Image (cartoon, rainbow, N blue to C red; front, top):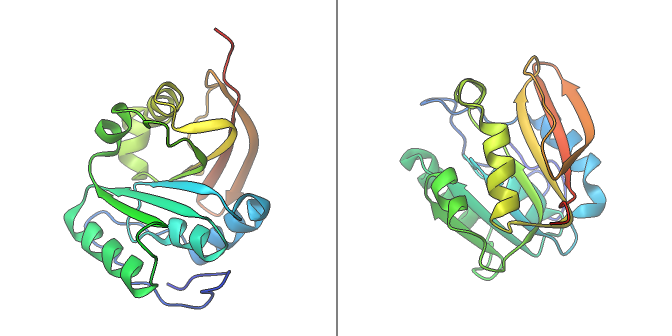
Length: 190
């Protein structure tokens, strides 16, 4: 797998398709990044279920000011740390968190609201567990996303999508067996 754009375009990343890992395909990442091109420069980005870190590294390569990667799987976490180090992401521009995404989000952002959230959860578990509405609620309630910020949720192509309070579905794109949902955070007045 290689980065598809930005200052580190073409750089190889360590990946694995074992142990439940399913890296986002290069063409899907390229399409995702193309759709978000104007959002990267200077952005604060949160990469959930980060795996190899490819999505967050694409954002950083394309000008994001800060990326926080969250991954709980130990093998994936080692690979993620190696990729971040290999690309030379400075400490003030990147943070790798080894934690369960749901527990970590539940603690709240503590003032670190993000411009962009990228979530690529394991398809089967996410579908069976109804993870999309749970993540939407945690992201909104915890102050993780700035008003007008974008959350991209990757899922299997045939999955069901429901309305999410506080979020507007701005785009729904399909690439083979993958579906990308682009949600815009529009908090409801209290």
